[in-house]
Length: 117
Figure 1 (cartoon, rainbow, N blue to C red):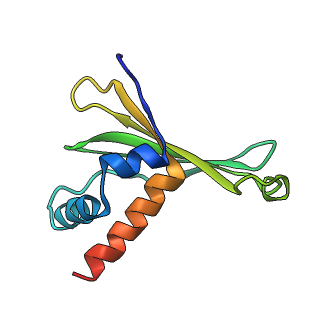
Figure 2: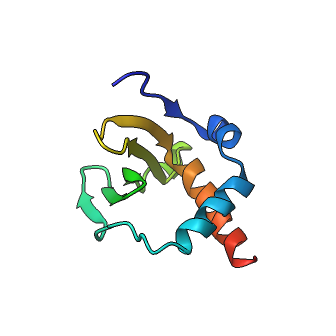
Figure 3: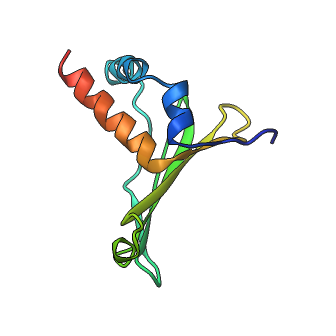
């Protein structure tokens, strides 16, 4: 595993424009290749809960991990914090960790963009 990067919100915005995300989701939604995505796993923790959302398909494998901590907002922290880990096709080595809130915001906007086409 070489150069396993963390991609934060600012870098994600530079690497993937909203237009490119809309195009990618439009292509994916129109494809017959539906990724395998089991129901999310939800585990109670001492401070709240942990949610895991794995998916795999011909384009790759990944898992979105979220924590939900009800006490965080009163400390000025987000209620939900997350991370997406992307694994390479073939040898399945970790390729990147992507900041979850930024990725979710990009995907949500791109889904709206596809819907308005």
